[in-house]
Image (cartoon, rainbow, N blue to C red):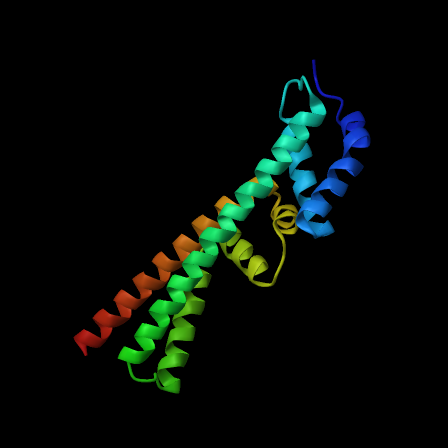
Length: 172
């Protein structure tokens, strides 16, 4: 038995979005979570208690996002602390050094696969996961993984360029 998506959406969308808006305090975010919830519902062969299933999945999505945010905040705090420690240990870079680092960062971004580069640049511009997903023709659920892998590849590309630049200076 396949799920009647139109009926499911008509029956529960408004109630789910209203609940999520109250829970999150942000209607746009609530719409995103509801959309992802309905996408996941379409992947099911059948739902025995549709309403309970939808609300459970929506709550899990919100909880998962809160965990990711907490990890990101913790990571940012660590990065800030490392940056402060590095600033105290190192002299201020010259404008030439900053320009070289910026050029290396641009080369690292350019070295990424197009999908990774576009995903990172769109997120940096403030686009939300559904907007990135639509622009790249991906599912909303895959955007987090795509961004995570793209960030990792960017770091790897940047570090490879740094190693290459270090070897070039050593040879001079």
